[in-house]
Image (cartoon, rainbow, N blue to C red; front, side, top):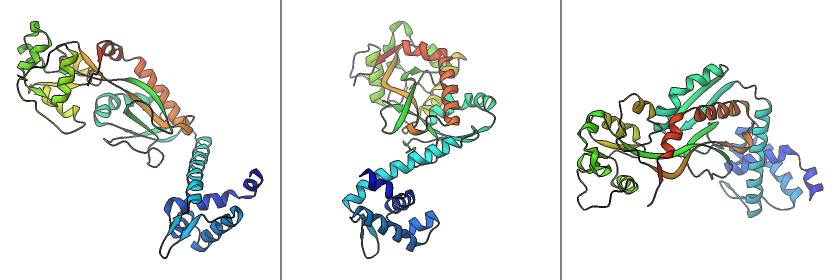
Length: 313
């Protein structure tokens, strides 16, 4: 088998991978800058060497055979590794670092700090986009992502940053109206912003027993809406649940109040992730090191993590 592999040119694997990925000899030819006839010839030559068909030729399309599917999976992985290795070898530590993350994390935690990264690395431009969907770093035009979860994404290296927490936050005016001598049960007398299910988790963690009288009906926003919910809370519309780490600056400045030192840990963390084979890319390594330094220097992370109670559904 090793002798057979040595006789197969890399160009044939490259052509096969494109044709298998696109399921079209014509589109593969366009992508590779070849003629359709040259793609067809390369595929047929590879099939002859392997002594088996890799595609089924249909009237207006092609489809992979079982053997072709096996080879396509391996070929795509191999080509991705090669592309990444070549890119990293030619990496000068310059260019654009494309980052994808959630809106709240982008606006509240990352964006205010990114200027420091630009000062430290003036030859690396930064493109930051917020996206509620989990992107595929092997297919989309991003170098890294910051996302919440358990850190077990296939093919990705995940670096833990800080825990995913939620606590009750409100404006100073709302906090003044709360009878905090009663403990966390006092939040039941105030309008609440967010989902009933999330409030049930926080109240349970705060030691408040379930009750039929749930108090004022919560004001609800769409998913991934911590920024909107906290804006409503800062406007005096009630208490909202959000990450105290994300909004530590507003708490420190007195624009938000955490009336009770109880945070629920979602049993997930916030992670920096990137393709495992790109871990040595200079711009990724520079961002990873810079980000970890800022996490280590943020006192709010340790403070609020110490308050955390594990989530119990």
